[in-house]
Image 1 (tube, helix red, strand yellow):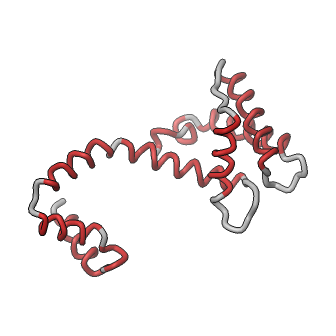
Image 2 (tube, one colour):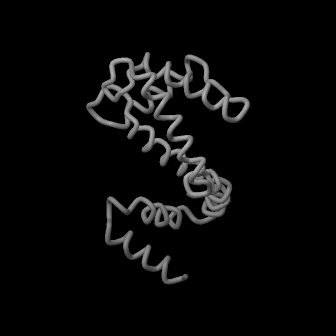
Image 3 (cartoon, one colour):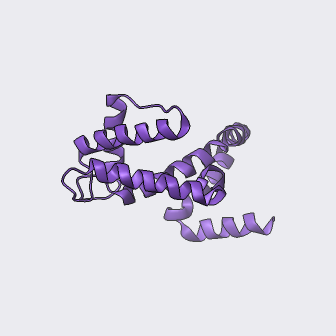
Length: 152
């Protein structure tokens, strides 16, 4: 996951970015409750974008519809809380890093699925049973993982 993070590659830059983030957050949190409602979130996105423009020379501010979708997505991260917290941003950052990393596997998965499609239907069913078994049949999944790692 380090490939996408200034935190490990340039800690001084990371600290500066986090200070700028905190400044934008505080300036956007009009009611000072630690959460951004949808209007405060729009202000934050604008301030954060301006900060990135100053730092990097340019930035891309999402349109109003995209900002609303980002707010809705962040707002789902803490159940029962209406508003976006800084912790939500940290959680989303980790999820986005995992998504970016998983994109590298997309062509490999397509190739694997293509190979699998050439197997007999009963073989495909057995393979899918294994892949779906973690929750449905933990013993089967554990055995399959044991086999998998014994090949290493």
